[in-house]
Length: 321
Image (cartoon, rainbow, N blue to C red; front, side):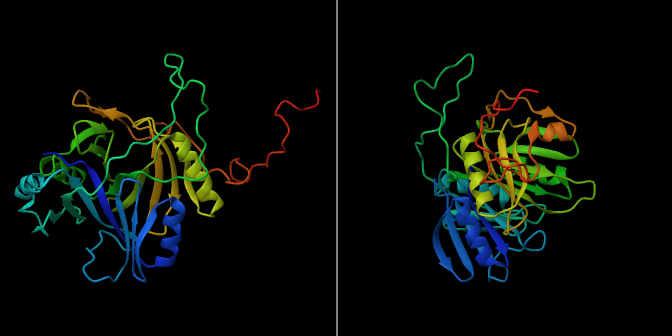
């Protein structure tokens, strides 16, 4: 009776036209549109909704807009809805309707469970040749002009009470701790077998509730680069990346989002099973990123922002001293 992953997210925002263009550039398909509401889908039909802040019925935010207003988690069947409804029934905002059940988590975030609408995909992805495994034979790795995200891979929130919120997700929804910053952050996955984390809860020294970022999974690290370069060409601002997280092993690229906080392309995260033992880490720059580029890469020059543009000469084509 486990949750399968994120099925849908809803943002509350003021600048709908700017959000509209951002998520189109990001690579999502716009499937519904009104002047005050946008509905997008990823490749596997995971939904992203952007609604005007004053839209009737929009769940309240844990911080001023723009921010994430609701996270919808997918389950496999109506039996899963019934199972989780029993555990959620005593929490604020509890409601059960059709094939979904909802409540509010201890930080004030609206969450809902529904029978998943996401579809199974068979995708061709890059093969990586290592010294021990030469799986890519007689073929070049792909290069992408832009990204087309597969799904929302994880969400990250600042919370005032880490232990209380983490306990809710573990005890009520069955999440598992993958790794920890003791007293500071918990990486949580919603299934025993799956990616490193679906949810990361982070408590700052000056504790507050709010959105840190939303991550979209793409095929492989090449698509992270291709998507990031496209966003750069479109004029969107990089917060950090590309880079690599040592804790989850994922390749990342973060952009500033008009729908709130940051948005991330990510790929190649660790795959865990019930045999995994959660580790403890001390927060620090080398723990967050093995390497990362501040300001990103210019989409035209293919060099770090403000670096000298390439000349077309070979790197070794220089006069000897």
